[in-house]
Image 1: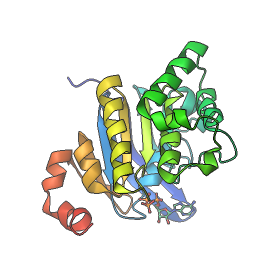
Image 2: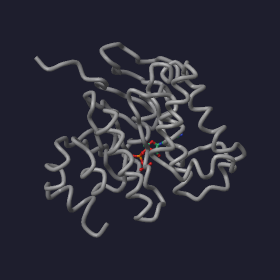
Image 3: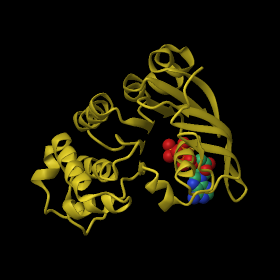
Length: 242
Ligand code: ATP
């Protein structure tokens, strides 16, 4: 029998007033996997990630983490379960220093001093640029550095599941590649489980072990990254010319 997935989403529905953003979504993420969620603007990708994180609340369906029902658990308690999120648009604290931003990540969970120190070391090994900028205000970092900081902050909570919303958005190709390389390193070296939402389907499906395609609040296609990259409908909709 297959082991319990780290995250299982079953029949999940969520809405903003009358707008049904999730219409019964099923996904699974196994421990140690990178799973990509791709789809057009407005498909509901961000909403799925946010609903797993507790806001908006699920209207129906079920979210299980490590076999436990976490549907309806408030966001701050989700963070304590060691699920971390780097939201779209990065949302770092612009007036706080790099160091303070990273500490805020550790504050989201009950990290020991040793865990904080180890977390900082990991983040700086992954993104040496952040160490060079440690005293600089977040808001004065470049877009790529802010993305590194947003991921670094999420890592400071020592997550078991890291959810990234459009980490390459607005970044130059070289910087985007550095971000994807860092995610791959975290997965291979630390065994970190990752859910990544991306417009850049090509990059995301090359990075991911498996992927899901979302259309209009529903999962319409699932497969390995390699399989999805070969599908003509994926190529036509998300890859060619873009
Ligand atoms: P994108 O790639 O553009 O971020 P997405 O796939 O992440 O798209 P969502 O942001 O989850 O899509 O949006 C799904 C639907 O829910 C869209 O129709 C959107 O307009 C709607 N929606 C999202 N956030 C809100 C909100 N705060 N209030 C009302 N409607 C919303």
